[in-house]
Structures are given as structure tokens and as C-alpha cells.
Image (cartoon, one colour):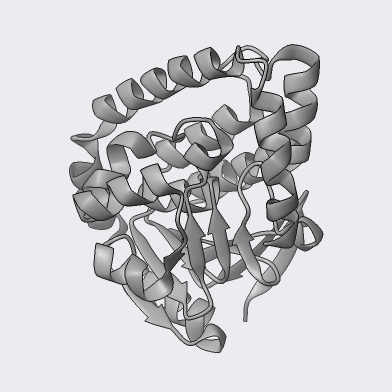
Length: 262
């Protein structure tokens, strides 16, 4: 029988050797503030270190997967210090490092809106299932910023190249069906079947010898590691340059109301 516990703003549930991590901040569409970034990083590293766990599923509470970075907190950081707190110790970086360091299969059950990091995080997942209600968006150009989480490198590899470029340049919404057609997601599920179907897929993986599964995953992903590191560096440099613009705070504020409605 599944066991349940709560870690900060992340709910944890185990079904056999599959751990489900649920981003739980539904009043803010599961937008990542510093606390959620840290809680998610800690929960992911704990799952990776637990020998009883063979795969991890990420999902969101309520109607959203995640609306990405909490723009209210980002505005406050831009207003006070330009948003730079030292790089490697930034909560976003701590979480992304936990994602990229994870040695176990990482699956996503996209239950609703996936915006910003909600979309770019999927490029780091091994398998993605989306609800029929899911909608995805990379809103970086409309916000006046640049892609994050190595998505400038990963999305053209995960998706049809033209679809990825259109998503990044137009900031248009992507439907669940379009996500599958582009190659970003494996399949669309009815909303009520999404999480059970994702857990069942993860359980099929964990039924195989752990050493074989992890070695196969490592072989698939290792060829990208250096390119991901380089893309993160380029994106960080470009983002830092854009943050020097006096108008950036206003552009992010303009987008904040839409995040609250997602």
C-alpha cells in the first residue's frame, strides 16, 4: 500500500519502488518560490539516494503542473539586487542540479498548465505523459528574457526543431496533442488516468534489474552532459545581461497577472 509524507512544499508518495513528488502550492499554480525550489531539490536528492526507489515521477497539485518561477518573488529580487545571489547557491540552481544529477529514471505527469520551468523541466525528464487538459508555454520572449534550464539546447533536441524554435520565439501556448506530435511528450491521457498511467509506466521500468536500468539511462544521457553545462552558462550570461536593463522589472510585472490566472 502507498505511504505518504510531506517534505516542505513537496508531497511525497511511494508506490512500490516508484516515488511520486508533487509540487504543492496550488494557490499559486505551484509556482516555484525559493522554498519550493529547495524542498523539491531535497526531495529529489533523497529519492535518488534511497535504495528502495527505482524511479521518480514529478507532478503538480490541483489544476497546474507548475507555473514556473514565482514572478512576484522574481520582481522583488530584481527590485532589490538585480536577481543575482551568487550563482551555484541560488535555489533555482540547487533544484536544477538535483534534476541533472539524478541517476534514476525521471518521469513527468503533466496534469495542467506547464509554464516557463514547467515546460523546460520536461526536457530533462526521460518520459513525459500529459493530461488532455495540459497546456504548455515558454513565455520568455514575451517577458523580455531568455530561455532557461538549458532549454535553448534541449528543446530543439527533444522536439521537432521548427516546433521548438516556434515555441521559444513566439511564446505561444502548446496543446497536449501538439506536445506529443512534437516529440516532447509520449502520450496524452484522460485527466483521471494520468498519474496512474505514469506510475504504471514507471513500475514497468523498476521491474527490471536496477543496474541495467541505471546504466542504460546513463549511456543515453551522458552524451548531453557537457552540452547542457555549456548551454546553462550561455543562458546565465545572457540573462544577467538582460537583467541590467531598467525595463526588465516592468516586463516581468506585466506577465505576473497572467501567471496568477494560469
